[in-house]
Length: 100
Image 1 (cartoon, helix red, strand yellow):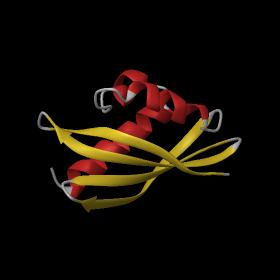
Image 2 (image 1 turned 60 degrees about the vertical axis):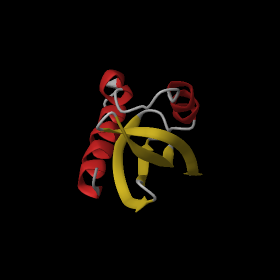
Image 3 (image 1 turned 120 degrees about the horizontal axis):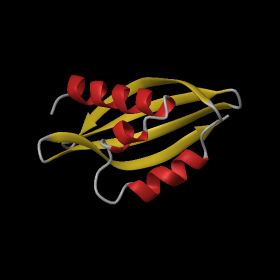
Image 4 (image 1 turned 180 degrees about the horizontal axis):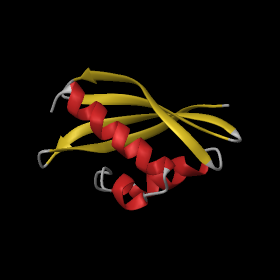
């Protein structure tokens, strides 16, 4: 798993989240992440209108992607931690880092 692969997965996940394609967005969640994702979604502006992967940083075999979600009510910045699970990039951690 390399930075480009993770960036592409994060962009697809973020775009699917904005488009309310939760089947696609959820397919990138690792085991046990559904509840965490639901909590993060509560902090998102409504309706979501855009997403941007602003950074991808690798460390110790995993990557952290910072994604800015925006909408009519403002913006929320989320750090998603990605790791390779069964050969695919999966989100194994989520954290809201800014809400404006």
